[in-house]
Length: 321
Image (cartoon, rainbow, N blue to C red):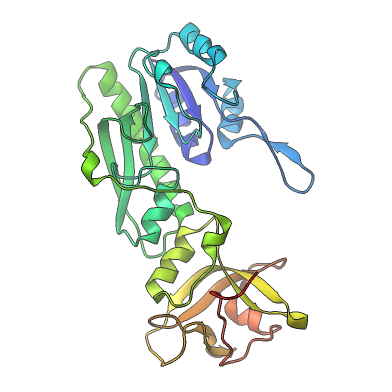
């Protein structure tokens, strides 16, 4: 089939490669414009742009799809289908039927659960035990179209958003090739979603990562895993000259004991027990952290040069970072 591919993030890259390997013709790849980032303000291409360039496919990087230039380009290609995955731009309603079979999307949740921009971190944050990818036909509203296929995976206690997305991207790439084959052979029809049980998966802000120690150990652990790589779970600790230091928390371990202490109280701060903090339930041991401006380290390594003592109250809820 002649396929237009639209995508930007790493999640879409395996699907682009899988479609090429399956023998489909991809004359053009749409991806988001280059962005300036880093200290030098250098331009960075999307992962999909890098992949398409390596494959020798023409790149098209419009700032918006909602313009006559894009509509004309889509018409001129006369594609059989458009595959859109983790692109980040909304397709106008007047373009949805330009390819012969319309647009299909791979979304990183079991729709209609977790419609929106951040399905995987929201699923982990809510302590879901299972998630998946949904292949569905695009409609004018976000993530509401009829479903062709699901593919599922467990969310492990060690999973982060990074590991789940990596796993789902590979599963989705295989499934989308299968679905396209069935569409071409007229052996599959999409089924309408159950809109009454839909849920949202909104984006997070940087401030959402601040840990509230009054939450349970399980809730904090989910937060730490969900917020990798963005916005990252973090805490504040006392620093030098009365200032506070921001610390990114990357791995925690729930301890099998309880102690009557105010949430946020440091229960241990030594080389033997490590860095342990009281929560709204069981205490948590900080296993891997990254102090601002420093390298990744264990909680025990951090204590060697920090001014943290047992009994100190890390009241992140009230610290202004």
